[in-house]
Length: 264
Image 1 (tube, rainbow, N blue to C red):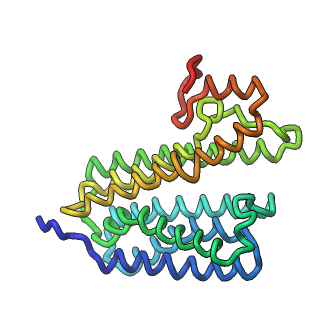
Image 2 (cartoon, rainbow, N blue to C red; image 1 turned 45 degrees about the vertical axis):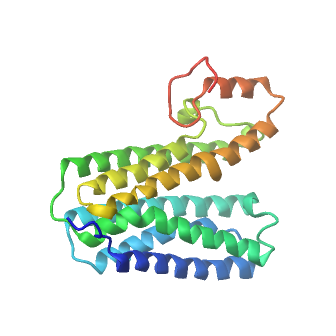
């Protein structure tokens, strides 16, 4: 086994592709001071790079399945977020940022790095084009599918809830959100762990270090830009609301679980 089995050229191709795509979308976003293409660029980059890799490499069933997992996830997410931003018009995350070139540019640089890190296991599997589907690969595919369904349903439920004018100023505590405060993030985490597990059979040597991908997205969503941001927002907004405090105390933070009477 070659412990230096990483294909550096393919990984550099992914990084360069992500950079080019982000620069293109950044020019549009900065030029028009718009938030409409920001998330479109994120999910769309995964789908675009996966499709380019699969059509330029040798075909194999595992490689095609892996490319499809990434592509379907990317198209679904970017399509949903693009439709949502067309509805809500502005993304408050970028208030005070989109107007400053360097601050806004730094976001796109970080997004480039994030796409590259998260994509690494997929790039390895797609470019290796392994011949056989293994039981571990099927396990990873099932985990990805469960995560994809959870994330899709959670996003749909929250979007429909927010569109109802009667729910203005309320938090969602129905559907999957009855059992988790952030089921969409749980679904996304499952997707990327599923893709890594799908590829384990085909990894060699340093390729196993591509576990940085699911670890990175898990850390990002749980401790940086996902859960902490929303938890802080809702805690401040509903700090004097006993019903919200009850919801928080009885509802799992991330993993959908039956209602608990204990605090997280």
